[in-house]
Length: 91
Image (tube, rainbow, N blue to C red; front, top):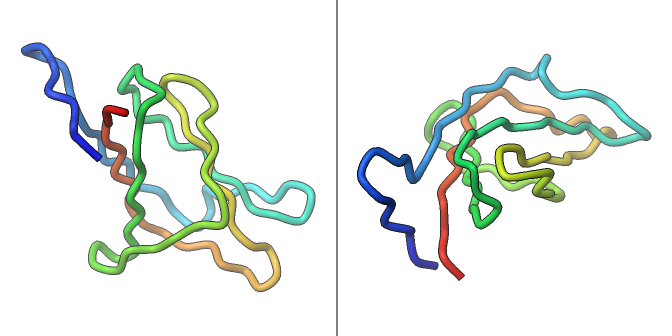
C-alpha cells in the first residue's frame, strides 16, 4: 500500500478518538461511525486501544468520502475505547 502525497496543505491522515459509549447497538452488532474528513474513499484504518494495542474489528465499511463505519461483536461485547487512524491510500 502506498501513501498518497497530497498537494500542499492537504492532510494524508486523521486521528479520531472514541469511547466505549460511542458504539451503537443495531441488530445484534455494535457499530461506530468514524468521521475522518479526508474527502477520500481510498483509505486504510488502523485501530488502537490504550494507544499501544492494535485492534481488529469484524468489518469496516466506507460510507462516503468522510466516514467509515466499524462493526464489532455484541456477544461477547467487544467494544473498546481507543483511536482510529485513517490514512489516504493509492490503489
